[in-house]
Structure formats: C-alpha cells, structure tokens
Amino acid sequence: MATNEMREFLETGVIDAGRMRAIEENAVALGYPALLMMESAGRAVADAVLARNPSRVLVLCGRGNNGGDGMVAARYLQHLDSVDVVYPDCGSMTPPATVQASLLSHSSVGVHPVRCAADIESLGRLFEEADVVVDAMLGTGASGAVREPLASLVSRANASAASVVAVDIPTPGIRADRIVSFHRPRVAGADVADIGIPLEAEIYTGPGDLTLVPARAEGAHKGVGGEVLVVGGGPYQGAPYIAAMGALRAGADIVRVASPAYIPMPDLIYERLEGKAITGEHLEAILPLVDRADAVVCGMGLGKESHDVVLAVAEAAKRAVFDADALVRPLPVAKETIYTPHAGEFSRIAGTKPPADLLSRGRCVKAAATAGTILLKGPVDVVSDGTRVRFNRTGSPAMTVGGTGDLLAGVAGALFCHLPAFEAACVAAYVCGRAGMRAAEGRGSGMIATDMLAYIPGELFGRAPRE
Ligand SMILES: NC(=O)C1=CN([C@@H]2O[C@H](COP(=O)(O)OP(=O)(O)OC[C@H]3O[C@@H](n4cnc5c(N)ncnc54)[C@H](O)[C@@H]3O)[C@@H](O)[C@H]2O)[C@@H](O)CC1
Ligand SMILES: [K+]
Image (spheres, rainbow, N blue to C red):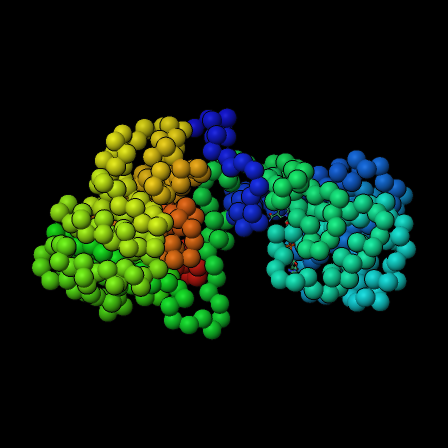
C-alpha cells in the first residue's frame, strides 16, 4: 500500500487521550524513540511561545512526560532575557523527563524545585514578570483532582497577567490562552503540532492498543472480568471449546458454553443441550444465559441449520461476536456486534469477494460494516466499524490450522466485556496474532490452535506465559 493511499485511513478531528497514548506507544514500538518525540514536541511548544515575542517565560512542569516537553521547550528558549522552570520536588520523574532535567542543569535556564505553597510564594516575582507562562504540568497522564503543589501552581498562574500556553492538554483548572496539542487535537480549538509520528503507528494495531485494556483493580470481586456465553457446536465438537478457552485466557471470569457438544474442561461452565444440533427447542434454556452474559460468542461448529436460533440470540444479546456458521444472511444483529469472517464468509455476508490489495480491501470492509464492526481475517486482518479502518499484521502462516478463528472469536468476546466493538476487535486481532507468532516458534506448521492459548495472557496482560 503506497503511503499517500494509507492516509485515507487516518482518523480526523479530535482524538482522546487514550487513543493518543496508544498511537505514541505504537510509534515507540516502530522505533521512534520517546526522547526524539519529546524533543520534537518541546521544540513545537518553544516555537508557539516565540510567536508571542516574549522576553520572560516561566515554564511550569510536572514530573511526567508533559513536564519533559516543557523542559525541552525551556532549553530552546534559553537565549531569551529570562527563562525559568518550576517543578515539584517530590516523587519520581519518567526516564525521558529525567534526561531533560539533567540537560537543563547545563543550560542558562533557572530551575526551581518546589514542595509547598510557601516555596511557590517565594517565586512570586517570576509569575509577576513573565510574559508567557507555559503549562507543562499534566497532559494525557492526568488522573483525578490536581494534587499539590501543582494545584497551587495552577492558581498562581491563573492570577498572573501572563498569557498561558498549555502543552498538549491544559492541566485541569488552568486558564489557557493557547493549546499546543501534538499529532492530533485533544480538544477542539487546539493548535496541532506535527511531531513526526509515522503513519503506521496509527493505521496498524500495535502494543500501544493494549493500553486501552482496563487493568484489573486490586481486590476486584468475581465477575468483574466479565461473563461470556459461547453458543455453538453440534455438527462440529471442538470449536466452542476453543472459543471458550480463548475467552477465559483473555480475562473473562466466567465462561459458559451452551452446546450439544461434549466440553471436557472443568474451568468452563457447561450448559449441555440435548440432541445433535442446536434448535429452537433449546431457546428456552439459552435465552436466560444470553440475558446474564456481558458478551455472547456465537456460531462456531453450529452447522447451517441453526440460524433461527442465532437470530433469536442476536435479538436478546447486549454484545455479540458472530463467527463461522452464524455468518449467513439474514445477518444477526445484536445491540453491539462484532463479525469475524474469513474471506469466504465475508463474500457470503457482503455479497462481494474482498479484494487482494489492502487499500481496496480496507475500503470494501468499511463499506460492508453497516450493522457492526467487521474483523476480516487474513494474512493482514482488516477491522472496520464503517467509519474507522485499522489493519493488523501480527500472525504466522501456521495460523491457517483449524481452530484459530474460534480462538479469536473467544478472545474478542472477553475483550468486548470491557471495550467498545471496534477496539475489542483490534486488540483481539493483535493479541491472537502475537500468540500465534509465539506458539509457532519451534513448532512451525505443526502448531495447533490450542498451543496459542498459553500465550494469550502474556501478550494481553504482560505476564510471561506458562507452558
Ligand atoms: N508518550 C510519548 O511517547 C510522548 C508523550 N508526550 C507528552 O507526554 C504526555 C504524557 O506523559 P505522561 O504519560 O508521563 O503523563 P503526564 O506527564 O501527563 O502526567 C503524569 C505525571 O503526573 C502525575 N499526576 C497524574 N495525575 C495527577 C494529578 N491529578 N495531580 C498531580 N499529579 C498528577 C503522575 O504522578 C505523573 O508524575 C503527553 O501529554 C505529552 O505532553 C510527548 O512528549 C510526545 C511523546
Ligand atoms: K499541560
């Protein structure tokens, strides 16, 4: 795909702090060092400050990377009459901010660590004389109410006559005259500085996308990881088992399987359905389970004869992932839906074969995603919610083995308990591809889908997988 064509898939307009952090981490993973990104960001802030022709500048920094940006800006402003940096003298600094603080000590910038309101009062002259105050206290890492000494710095800056230039996002409560956001605006009205993030950081999934997965709080109770219901099996026995295990390994607390297939696994809750295939007679048993599930994963191993059941499940489900035999017309539509077709299933539901080249393929999936998010599986997966398009290139040729699609649907189901459809599909595709790459190491085309299960938690939650 040529670079200028890829631009078609860039998001436009305001993006939130979470997405921006994901893009930045993807850029770092592609080899763009955080320090260089910070240099570029700080330089852009310095340019915005210089446009105001100041003589005296006061830069208020936090101890995170937003503060690091501010320190870079101060370094580029050191030739002015006076440039001073104020930062909290408590807690640890991020590694890139530590580098910036060290460089400042070799510059002509005045550096003032503060601990309390009295320290800030003693710096009153700097606030009174500044032409521009730079707010580099908190950016995308801000959480909760602003703590001291930053809260006092915010009040002091608001009381000064200087114009305030905010770095990336204004620190909560500060009166900003100008905002310099990086890469994309975080709030309407912000100026945007290009900091050279490579396009692929935004268009392809990457490890940064994992930052969207919420961390499990200490002391969390059973069930917060989500309840997934798998509805499948009949003519084919193994598929619902693999999907259910994928959901468990991707963090679901409770996974029920409603199936006529025998499910040989004590970690799963087995809701055995009588007979050889799922029929309308089973709905009485299935629908209460659909009702209590956070997400339903449906279709694997079902055969083509159970579509009425699939449609009824869709109608009752809050969130559903439809895969395999559920992917026939009329298309099942839940309140929120993810479809996980391979190329053949996509042709069946979209009425057109997915084109081979990625640009046309991206457009085609986008056009087809009218009822929910589509994750078209392939050597490069394509995800679209009808507005956004994202590509995923993790994976291994060994993943053509049976069962990997069932596993992906299960992983997507678990993630769907916590993330919107598009994000859940992107993270599921990335994580399954990574798990496939790990499982194929030393196994090659002898890898089987269940080999991937052990790698899902490590890839998703950062812990080393246990064999
Ligand atoms: N991640 C990257 O690669 C890049 C990040 N950049 C900058 O980095 C920023 C994000 O950096 P960080 O993730 O380090 O986060 P921030 O620098 O926004 O904030 C984190 C720091 O603030 C503290 N903090 C959080 N909430 C607080 C509160 N309510 N009261 C007081 N202190 C609080 C934390 O303890 C931590 O020290 C962006 O906004 C942008 O300015 C840029 O340098 C470009 C590259
Ligand atoms: K800021």
